[in-house]
Image (cartoon, rainbow, N blue to C red; front, top):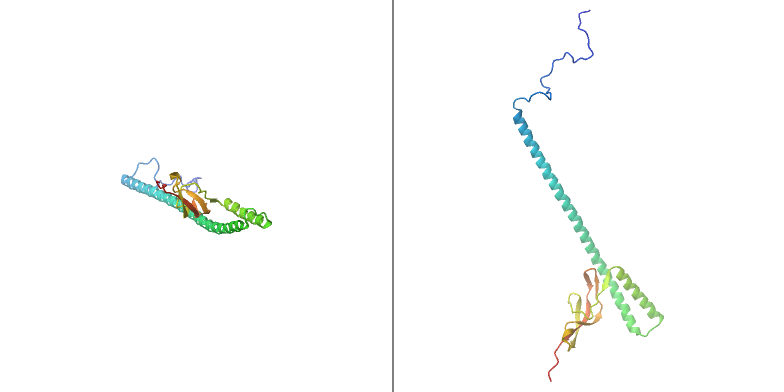
Length: 195
């Protein structure tokens, strides 16, 4: 031959093993127990930080949901207030139509009276569809939260004391809010004089 070593297909066959490569079967080097303890401590600290961040994220998500719900409730409340304002305006128009019908007389059967009655009934039905309810107070105990007492009627019956006798103006509610209190006459018990 020419004095050169024979060539092989694997160029790393004759190479010396490197000292810095650690094989899985190799025993751990000295001082690695301290390194393992340090890495374990770092791992635990990282896990605690991840848990802390996860809890913070969950709290943030919970706060965001509560904020969205609060905004929704506030928006609904504002819409109800505006609906109440519109309903109050329409109720004033209904009152004027009622006054017009009362002036025409109960026996009036003219076309104008029928038309006014149809308009009044149509407005009331639209208000009912929007959630406006008429308060039924006659015969009920007087409640200053739902009605204004404008007159008093004396009664000899003690069971009728502080009961609503009649309405001067109807009261209305929208959901759980009174949009217009009723004006009512309230009975007041006064014992009959002993004769």
